[in-house]
Length: 183
Image (spheres, rainbow, N blue to C red):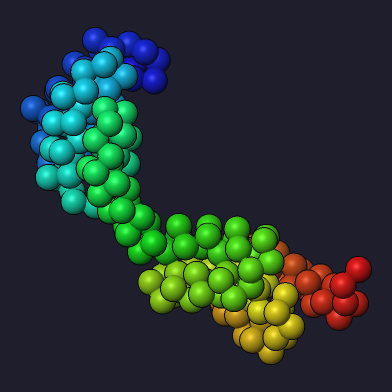
């Protein structure tokens, strides 16, 4: 209802979720804050976002929305404080770091990509895509032995035979391309 622009129905659903459901469910508070903010009720939005953070201190959407709200009203100090909190939590998220690694690899920042991937793998050692990308990164750095070890680990962790087969064919193509040198 929120996305459809049906403010009254969205508000009724959020109210019911929070009164009849679980009032500690932070996404309901965050979405209620979004509803209030879209309707210019900034003080209500702030209260809802703060309630979301009270329920879950790591609700990134609530933190990010608070930062934007404070920026909008000119409270740069509180906006900066919440942006800092968002950054801190994002950098601890292995999936966010995986995406940073992808960006670093695309930009040719191979050492940075390795750092992000090693962090991601330290937090989620069984994510095959993390291992595969680390293999790609090592191969781009010219470290074929390390690349092969990470490719093997990715294949070992793959959930299905189809994914293992896809990795095997990608690895073969990557190794052949690597041996041909830059074009």
